[in-house]
Length: 388
Image (cartoon, rainbow, N blue to C red; front, side, top):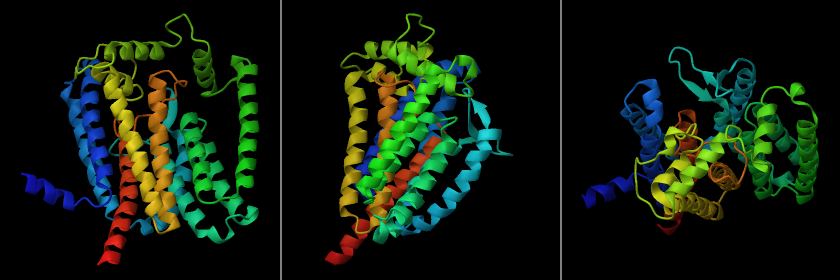
């Protein structure tokens, strides 16, 4: 048995610790999703096992995607990045006007024939980070030039984030901040980053001023939802209906205590909206206590640490920027999802990577992990050739 396991590990190249983190996250995902979908299964009049099997299939598919993408030399992703980014832009535009509305937002496209939906921002997020890594690596000789480097790199960021923001502001903000960090890592001049930071503060201040000064009747689209979420976070209402999700998440966390081991024993799954996606972290704490919640945080922090090791060892700028961009994006998303569950930030709607139940999010997250592992695999192979 041990020999079989050891031989199996040989086929998984790259950072073995990241592979272990992926496996642990998927295990937590299957346990939590099976528990959290009990009420959903009852409403849909189906067996709870249906959602468990779906999550198992997604986990297996995700690992296969990781394996496939990590076996491709990461240098090929430089060319793939161009194609993906140019495809993602018209898809985002199409989603804004003709997207499928789910949970009061047009974030999805329904694929014809098969009838499956996928979130175009997931593709755009992956494509933009890959494209940024490519552009920054190609412009290292002119990296401090405003016209030759800063503007051409900034334009794709602004276009992508502006197309995502109307229906998914939290994802747009996360992507923008990640992109700025990648620009900093890619040696963009600090004065240009400072200028961008200052302009972002001004735009943000104007946006929030309009959001809270204009009457509700003039707010269109998702803006009213954003306003209410911020208001409820700053001034929690005594009316439970105003911040129902947050209240139920707090109850779930309180029931979990410090140490607990009660898989499938969640009670708040019957009251908490979307306990299998946006608030799955609250269900994990309810069933496994704060120790279980801390273990999830530790997994993501360990993943970030392993990404940093890859960045330090990467011989080429593209590989390092690819790993740092994707790693920071995934960990930031995870931290914000968990911060929402414990009421540290307003409700956002972002999922917990590899843990929340989902389709396109699991697919594109798995591809991102696979690309990071591809960079790690390449480093290992080059090191082996040097020592041979």
